[in-house]
Every structure is written in structure tokens, then in C-alpha cells.
Image (tube, rainbow, N blue to C red; front, side, top):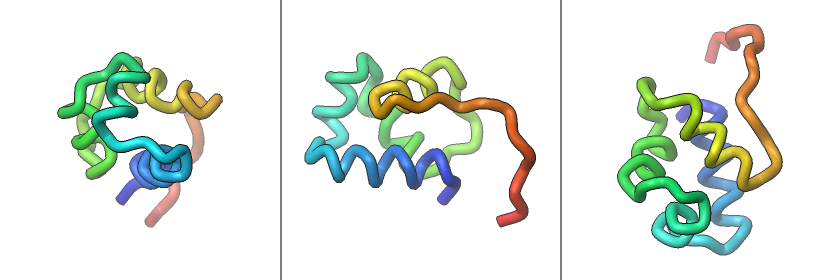
Length: 67
């Protein structure tokens, strides 16, 4: 699982939200949330940033880790 997927899933759970509740609050679709948390490699960055924005974060360019 990639870092963003792990962060979203852990943060959502810590906030006590189901995927459905998180989707409604973030304005994103449940399918997108599921795919994001599963680490789908091809997702829209604007939507990723909407999800991250729920926790005061955003995706920015950085050096690629070798996981």
C-alpha cells in the first residue's frame, strides 16, 4: 500500500469515519475512496488532494522512495 493510501485509511479510521461517511463529507465518490485506499496507481490528483485536505494535508512533488 502506498503512503497516501495508508495515510488516508488510517486518518479516516482515527476520525471514526466509515468510507461512506468520508466520501460524503469530502464530496468524493465511494468508489474513488475505495480505490484510493487500495492504492490504485491511476487516480486524479485533484481528488487525492480533496481527500488529503480533509486532514489538512496536500500532495506535493517529492523524491520517490524505493519501497
